[in-house]
Amino acid sequence: MSLTKIPSLDALPVVGIDDDLQTVIQARQKLNASFIMVGQMLDAPSGVPAELRAKLNAVRFHITTGLSAIDNYLYMGHDGSDTAGEVPNLTQCIQAHVEALRQTKPAWDNWLKTAKPPEAPAPLVANANSIEPGSTEALMTPESALDLTAPTPLTTYLAIGGIAIGAFILWKVLD
Image (cartoon, rainbow, N blue to C red):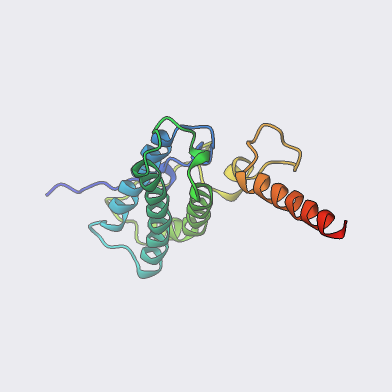
């Protein structure tokens, strides 16, 4: 009987997943690959402990909500070559996905060290694709509030516009 190998948690495509300038289709492909890989981890032949199973299900939940946001965007007739930043709520889903991965990583490493499942690969050494807090944290948060390379979220523009309209109405009422 051959053993079915499962992917490593370190192999999930997280680098660049938060890029608002990638196309909607590229973001969907990355999330779909992560969804499949997490599903394979949950179906490990030797079994996954309850704590790790719950954490992996949380990761899969955030991936599913991201995929749903993209599918809804495409279903509404938008083009798949639009930037991922235009998809409503996708950024929040991806941030929650990466945070859930960071919370799952210690339980994953503990399972690999203690249970030593034969179908699981050894942990990868920390690299640019790693989900350790120090490695991709720079990718997820800009180093300063004045980082002009990251696109400005739509909510910022809406908040500024709302404040401007409120000030204009107040000015007209006081006249």
